[in-house]
Length: 482
Image: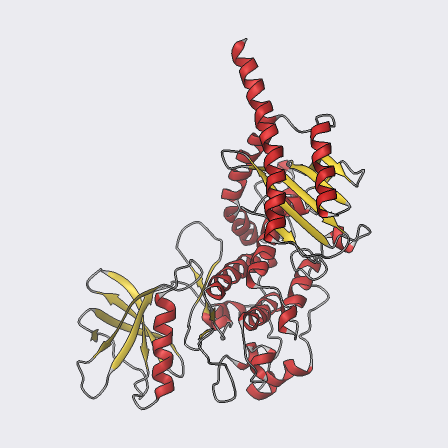
């Protein structure tokens, strides 16, 4: 029978049912009140179909998947159970956090979403997908209706997204594959392999997320129409990305929407690319403001866009100010060439057989090279610099093939005359946790970079930081002795 409960029903003696807030083919979702903990919750009631073994299996899988997940971009499972008070109807249910706010389908119905907002939403979702993929889960139904936008009713206007409904999710490595006998996903957002009833993996979720992001930018689904026609269309043609889409977005979406699963970036790479876009976009907006108009948004950016990006970047700006204080503490910027560091970068170039090796320091608006082998350039602007991205990481930042990596496709060092194809950088981290810059190597050819290579590069960076620490301590000792 269809999943249903009347308002006021007390489920399992604890959850007071309020109103139906969503319905699918296999379940209904209700707003409810937890009488024990005195809080609002969402209750997902499954359809009562005891003879359907596949349906029962899916219920169990959804409970098992959600019970093992804990991530800010996923809806949290609070409880699960079965109400047996009516012997005629078994009520099997999940209790989840109640997310206040619209879903992305409702939001996109209002028109295109600004690139700034969409990058924030996409970053959350890609981060959540990377988390579940790491745990061997494929969602298989990433679509706007399953993406909830959280409204915390506070001044923070930053849109925060949560992925919901793991009803058709699949646990990898359990001997099952998605095939003709097992429908999964929604036709407009299927990956090509889903549409062709072929085995699916994490790349399928990345493709579906690409369709969601493209629809967010354009306000239109990439494959509209009747279910069968929509599903088959992606096997015949790639989705159209309008010319007005910014180059970095176009490059990222093109890679996510490749018909070949192996050519798509991993969800983690998508998350990093969108995080970099969020930071770059916030920087561009700040740079377009004049001092006299600092309190007003620029003419081509809505007030809501500025509020969202500026509020979300407030912690980042505070961290950046603290990082710059650390840079100033070491007194390294604009110092003369140093034989010690020059020898270290030369050694790195020989060890890794690369043409370029650099010790960089990331300043407010530039990347300054303390030592550089294989290039006469002494500094570059911060915006196109890969080192500016590397200092945001807590570990090595490696781009094996920049021509296929969504984080770097539109970077001028890659697309321009320099022809960068490989980059590996590790942060120069102070003892108190601030990244001054990077020790990086570059090549004009793609290459593999092993875990052993990363450790070697980290050792070279540690030598640089040890030298900087000794110089800082010497200056402090001299100052104390005066």
